[in-house]
Image (cartoon, rainbow, N blue to C red; front, side, top):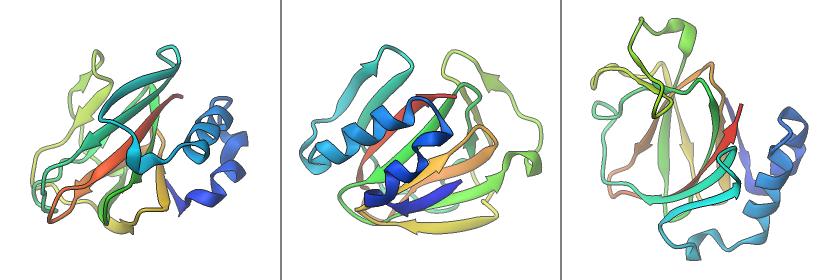
Length: 148
């Protein structure tokens, strides 16, 4: 997991061949004005999903992992708390290959939490269990799905 300010995102371009294009998109668009929905930047290998979350507590946030994609998550309308647990610390669970997600039961709390504010981002790799979307009011956010 990486958490940093959006202005520094290009520093991570060497971590994946698609990160440079993702960074260019994120830095060249007014993220708050993006409409809800999905946009393909490079076919199915690089997608931008703009979504509006509902209020969620730590207890309601399900830990998840992905095998095929890396998530770059950016809250744009308010503070979002994101939970983290290394995937190696999570019990076995069923993987949904169609949706590229493994979900753990609601109430399985993350080991740690980080506050991510507008102007910041979090990157979750396949080895990173994450519980995003924790916020008392809901938040508009951008999720970039990058082929791992």
